[in-house]
Length: 81
Image (tube, rainbow, N blue to C red):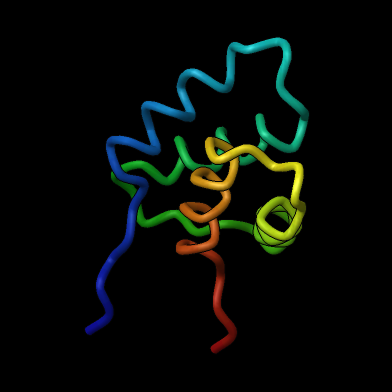
């Protein structure tokens, strides 16, 4: 049986600080919202959110904070079955 992943307390704390911040990008807010939605649930990331997370991880300008959110979102991406 596969291990059920959910956003951890640290990621949830980061996401809750990112969402109200007017200075962060739309992508960062989307990743933060997704990470919060996955907290203590079995919800999975949509393909679009997973793509945005992958793009953020590959962008050299992305902050460590946003990379943490992106990594969390990618651990819950939908898989092909």
